[in-house]
Image (cartoon, rainbow, N blue to C red; front, side, top):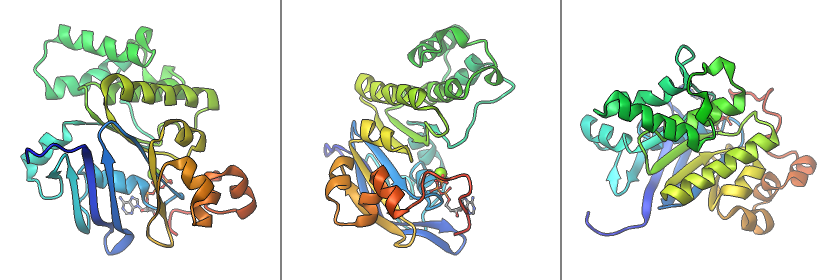
Length: 270
Ligand SMILES: Nc1ncnc2c1ncn2[C@@H]1O[C@H](COP(=O)(O)OP(=O)(O)OP(=O)(O)O)[C@@H](O)[C@H]1O
Ligand SMILES: [Mg+2]
């Protein structure tokens, strides 16, 4: 317990799925403190599902998930809540409350989980909005903003409680390359300024090569992790041709593997 460790998250022989359907099994990896760690894999392989298991929303079919040495799987309600409170999360495709201003959205976790005064909360909200370059937009409604601005506001809300563990599911999906690069810089800044450990699910190769210290790649047919390491080494040297193809655009075009970039028509049911 008191042993000092630089392992923030440990996933130990975990299987995930819905009902009796197993999506992934024998998942094993560790995320180190201060690391930006990407979870990759083809559409529908179970990336978002895995993320929801790590943050304690779902329980795995088997195996254990440790957050700073504590099992989030075995933790009871109150203990699990306490672990979850350390997290900042943005979910895929979501979601600011449309009927609230940006400032009200960012204030929400502070009102819910702290007993700070409205004045203190207002100051913290402003600080977070400035961090994501939305200092002047607190009074705007989400509908009045661009997609990139909404994504940034989502990050500001995820950071409201100064979490040291952040989870982002497809933070730059659907954004133009310049906006997406801005988001990458923001993620790097969060890690560098606050020493946060950040787990990102992403399909965007540019983003992976910019931000990721390490990645794991899950593959639908194998139903498990087929590669782990730094993305450049995997792209250039992985013994697995699917992994090399996935990580290199040319490879994707010629091998047609993964088809991660044509997601509109992607089948969700295998
Ligand atoms: N709540 C749920 N109940 C039952 N099945 C689900 C549920 N959520 C997701 N699934 C199914 O589990 C599979 C994996 O979904 P998941 O969203 O985890 O994939 P993903 O890798 O994040 O995909 P994408 O790249 O499209 O975001 C899909 O076949 C999906 O339809
Ligand atoms: Mg997903």
